[in-house]
Length: 229
Length: 229
DNA sequence: CGGATTCCTGAACAACTGGACAACAAGTGA
DNA sequence: TCACTTGTTGTCCAGTTGTTCAGGAATCCG
Image 1 (tube, chains in turn orange, green, blue, red):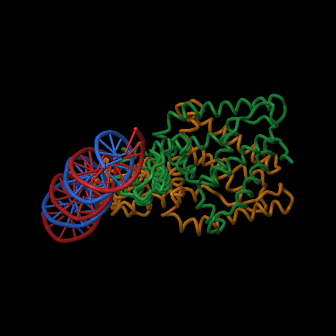
Image 2 (tube, helix red, strand yellow):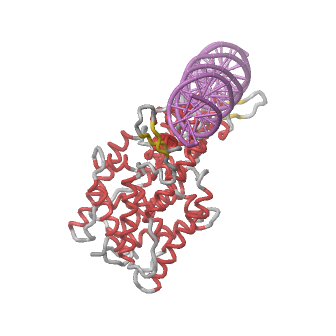
Image 3 (cartoon, protein in one colour):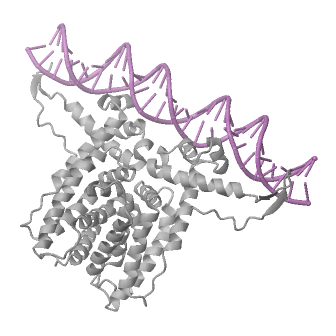
């Protein structure tokens, strides 16, 4: 996410006035600034909501003048959309498929751990998504209706096949996915609440490990499974 | 919540020009309008966030002119605060205490069911709370630091005593509370997502019953308990 | 009735916001 | 070097927003 991909840009080498080789990559600046702006936008939108975020704030956080931000993203709406494109692409890369042949314990444990890891690595993305959904998903409604629905149904079918084969307790697969989704998401979205209750200043890596251990333990046992290993 | 309490208002009876008896209660109008405004505010704030909500929108939803809204709540911030006072009072009324003498299965099942019921009855309150926390709890930080922390710790101690007495599996009590909190909250906060995935237009009562059954089943089993009855 | 209190509301305003735009600078490739 | 593309930014503007305020209406109660 933080590295700048220039894979498909052509590369030109040129000698400047002092005879040194200089490398120009068209679009390089574009990509670097787009990146900077989107990172700033993620923070601002997550902190203040869509309407509460001003282009000016994003610009300041990115260290650019407002006009320059509007040069890259013609308007605020488009910027918000581009941000979610980024986030969804990032998520898609992480969640691997599952199949009826997999071991239920392994597969569910991996899913839970991956999801907790997402809460740790991309808390802003998680919060942005949450706020968008809470407000009725004005931008993501179509995505929910198509991609998300298929995603959940595909998983649910696999879980159902495990149940049919008697490899786990008969629990509602869709509800199970919601349970995993919400309980893992919680560590990113309600960070402040958790830190306050636990009287901590900030999360540490082992807090997430502990949470993942707890969740796999309780949820797997709740599904009539033993934790793997 | 929707009934208008006038308990402590004095009551005066007067004959008007046509000789009819008329009843006046000072502050009656105030209370009715405060109520209307707060209900409208809940809807608007939940839908658009703090900064995204305009006093104008709240006024329109309440069927009052903007100036009139500002007569009751001198500014936006105070209105937001009054709303949370209402919400927290409402919540406090519902969540009963638990004690080491209680049956763990009964107590946890009741807690889960109450919490799901809250998601059903007051989804807006749940969403407002969620958005506030996600954005760093600028208004509720102090509440989290004091009330919420004590609340969680008190419950956690009781759960720990059950574990010490060998009445349930040794799971982290605080994490267990978070798990119940997040999974139940989810049905209110992520309503749109759930409806989309399940391809429904709106929730029905039995959806919540089903969810509560599922959650008590999995979570209690995850804690090494049998579901009550 | 009549004086006091409570309630209502249109108008005004200063601050802010998203966005347009034109002039200009820097990068690019021959 | 030179023509062209891409990137940069200050300025301007129309619309919105929270809040103030003063005048007036309705309610209250002896």
